[in-house]
Length: 241
Image 1 (cartoon, rainbow, N blue to C red):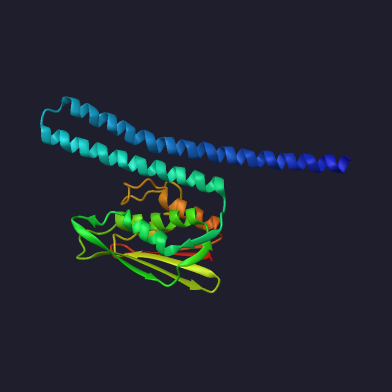
Image 2 (tube, rainbow, N blue to C red):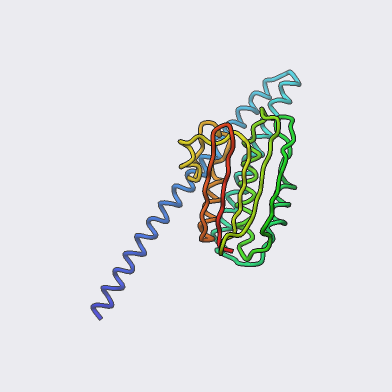
């Protein structure tokens, strides 16, 4: 009986430690989310104040455009957070997935132009049907393709995104490569950290690549990045199929 009581006590202490860590993580998470939402809200209030005092129509239109862009970014951020929470709650749901369907859907809903130039998509689909988690695959592919578009280089004659899928042994490989702005070497080790934003990419919410890495980890896979600043970026996702 004494041994059982000691074992139960140790288990309770371990559970308390785990709960303390979870609560600390939640506190930090909530703080970061609210901070990310409050900053643009303060900017919106400032823009509204400027509109109240402005008399020139063209300047008012410019302020309205800035407000629209800010709201769209916050909507994107909130959607990413909802996807993150939903993904955590559901766990891993295995079903037959079509990579072709996911990729086509992502491309259809992506913006095709930046800097007045069309962004070209090149697909090399050597693997389509896999048994995996549909929601997490969408999170991974959508974020990687969206980033390729967001950080494309309008100075280049052609802007492109290449998406490749194939099988290697028991694994499915998904590659997303672009000839965009690239990632500095000092940032490459931190881009998957939650809320990390490099100096060059301060327009980001800092959550997209964290969601990608988290989804890949939940699927018992891994993700790698190779990039050269102002040249290219290539993400390689390896997941069991």
